[in-house]
Image 1 (tube, one colour):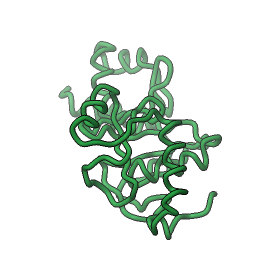
Image 2 (cartoon, helix red, strand yellow; image 1 turned 180 degrees about the horizontal axis):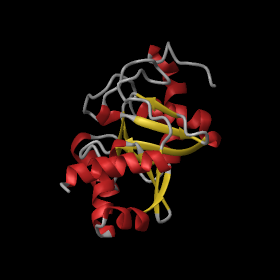
Image 3 (cartoon, one colour; image 1 turned 120 degrees about the vertical axis):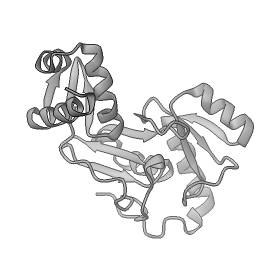
Image 4 (spheres, one colour; image 1 turned 135 degrees about the vertical axis):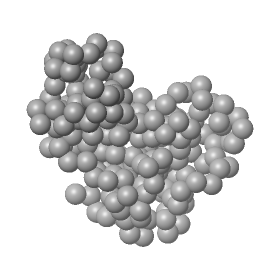
Length: 197
């Protein structure tokens, strides 16, 4: 079986069974667990499966990234997307880390997972482990103050050296952004902001 065929069959198998162990996938498809891990990487980055202890789980409903932002209503692009996964497996998509952090702050008690994209590699990473650069000199996205997410602190630090900005982990980024939004009185950025659900 060709790798692309196997990946598609793995996708269908996980979707059908909802939660699967890596060892079961290895046995089912007669390949090593390492091969399964490589095959799953694309599905994890795509955001359709989530890693669990010893396996993976299908996400019941993944909103397309092209849908409008849950906070400001604007259309987003894949490389800036920020997703919030609720306990009922509902997924909300924000157009960028700016809107994602604001929404995450609103509903953090109800969210079981948050995902964002590394600005350089476009890799899907856990928002809890990511690093955030606020107010750099690079103009990307529509929301201000601009927020960019990075998987590795060292990469984010190098970015700040070259393009300015302030670097924060998740909770501090949320707090700083909240303070900044209050100071700037939002400058019209979120006139369409939806109320908390």
